Image (cartoon, rainbow, N blue to C red; front, side, top):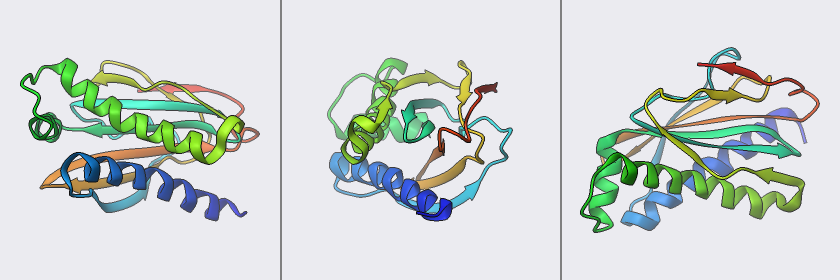
Length: 167
């Protein structure tokens, strides 16, 4: 499989996970708005109020990160019937989205790929590891008038031989 075909497959895998999350919680799928490459030296994230990422190692090396606004996550909490709207609850929702990535990845690659538990955080309070040498692929979504971001930053193990911390 060519690198371009691999990239397309990764984008489809993770963008489908985001769409399905919103479809399950609201009956309305999130829609892909745009797909673009970030600079190789840029942190693999589209910063927002709440962020969560999973890292992976095996047939791929890298991370997948989701970023969403407080308003979007509050709407999800409202639909789920939760009565609290604290940071902890918002982080729980963004971690649930990242868990979808982990689940889909494990289903597709099985034991050939180790996937971390989601790591959620508020704003820019945490360094995001740059695990691959590839240009991260950013995907923006819309759902009920809100925007969210997804960054797929994965590469083959040979190409990603060093880890760089960027902010």
